[in-house]
Image 1: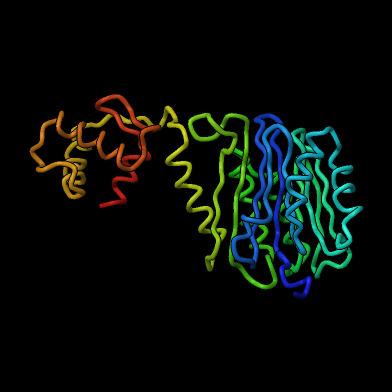
Image 2: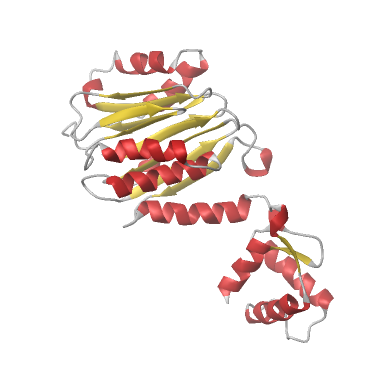
Length: 289
């Protein structure tokens, strides 16, 4: 097989938020299932993106080197110095303190290169232009909110600036934080992939918003009392969805049905005391009928 057959032509950003302890990678490519190859991260340690003629061993080995106390520059050097095909590789590395480094081998297909900035490294190959990478970095620096939101904003900006010259196919978002995963039993905060889609970043954004709905915490301003008007609407909606038998159901029947609906839709984390509802859950119900 030609050694260039499996080139992961892509753009990615690895980043850290030292204040929150979040570390992550966002990536898009004209490549099937890019999330299975490029992004690697470990809570309290760092994040790595390996692409171009991707070497998947760069992920776990890079994290091992960071864990052992090596700097990001030392990590990149140690990954590439003994790799006979490093001239065709590309890698970005960030540590938990936000130090970042990027490497592009001189045999990577144009446009190829990377930039580093405050707490991030952005890189890409076979791109329309350099701006794909520079705008990715600038947008990350100016974006607000959790690390995942900022990484997604950076991907959108990169695509708008030019993107992969071969087109679009897959995207992924991977963010870790100590004990921030499901039920506090893992470090994986966000792990979302779009493996094959005509507009993968938009689709990734859509499922990320669903992820936030299902697993995000209810904000105080989103807790709303169920008034008479909402009760009547919810009775009709829940009747249409098969949770209540009639619009003349009592309040107890309505609230029991609402709890069943919340459990069925996996919104337990957003459940409120009887007579109250998370505004986002209410809007989700509205959009279903």
